[in-house]
Image (cartoon, rainbow, N blue to C red; front, side, top):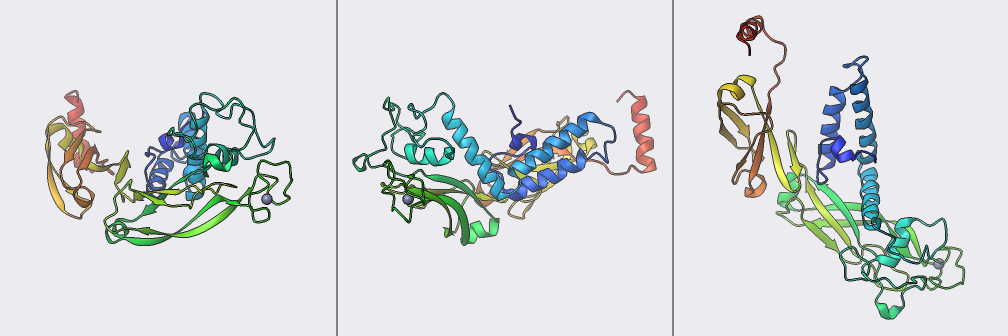
Length: 321
Ligand SMILES: [Zn+2]
C-alpha cells in the first residue's frame, strides 16, 4: 500500500497548507541528495517526501486526495451498489456515488444499511433522494479567525443538467449534455462567511451547496475551518502542539526555557532533569483563545561549535558520556 502522504510529511490530517509546506521544506532540506551524497536511504526518503508533497502540497491536489480517500474508505468492505454500475462504464466513481448514495440512508456513510438486491432502478421522487454532501477544508489565519472574515471559495460539484433539467436520469432517453446522468460536473464559487471567534476544526454548513441530485434535493457543503498554526506549531487531531527547542545541557541537567505562546505572551517553563526529546506538557489557557497549549520539547540543535565547546565535549567524552 502506498505511504500516507500526511505521515510521510509528519503532519496531521487537519494541518493547514502552510504547515504542510513548512514541514515539507524542512524534511526536503534534511534529506536532500546534496546533503546526503550516495546515501540510498536518504534518497528514498527524499523521494517519498516529494511524492507526498505532490499529493497534498496544493489545496487542489489535497482536496482531490482527501476526496479519493473518503471514497475508498466508504467502498472498503464491499460494493454498496450491490447491482453493478448503473451508469455503465466510463463514469467517475464520485459521480455515481454522489447520485446513489448521497444522504438518503440513515447510516453515517450515507447509504442504506440494507441495499435492495438490485439498485439499477434510480430512486424515485418519493424516496426523497438527495445529492451527496461535499466536505472540504478552509485555511484561515489567526487574525481572520478572531475577527471573522469572508473568503471566496471555489469547488467542483454536480449541477443539474441544463439541457434536460435532470429528467433524462434513469431513463433510456439519451441526453447529449449529460449522457443520461441528469447532472454535470461544474465549478462553483461562493463566499464563505467565517464568524468572529472561529476555532480550529469548526464546521460550517452551507445548505444546498453540495452535489445536486437530478431529481431530489441538493446536498450541503461542509467546510471545516483550519487555523494556521504558524511556525514551530502544528495541529494534531484538533490539538495545538508547540515545539519548544531545549539545549542538550538543559535536557540532561534540567533548567528553564522561554516559550512564546500563540497569544504572543512570553512564559517560562521548567525543564526537569532528564527530560527527553518528544516529552510533552500541557499548559492550561495558553493556546488559541484560551484553550490549552501542548508543548513538546525538541532538541535545540547547536550550530557550529566553538573551540571551547568542542574542548568541553571532548572531556565529557572521556568521562563516557
Ligand atoms: Zn441532461
